[in-house]
Image (cartoon, rainbow, N blue to C red; front, side):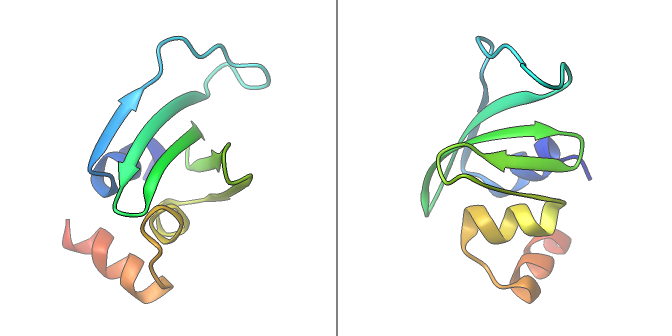
Length: 83
C-alpha cells in the first residue's frame, strides 16, 4: 500500500502540499497530517515515508501507523486491516 494511501486511512486530516518542490525524487510528495498525537509533515515516495519534523522514516503502512498513532506492531496491523 502506498504511504500516501495509508496516511489517508490513518490521519484525522490530510492535505497535500501543492507548494512542495521535490529535490531528490521527483515523485515524492509532502503531506500535512493531523492525528491524536499531533501534526506531522510527511514526505512520501511509493511505500516509503519520512517525517521531516521528527527526522524519522520507514517503509510501509505498518511503520507509518506505528509512528503517527503511537501504536504497537500488533495494534497497527489491526488498525490497518479493520479499514
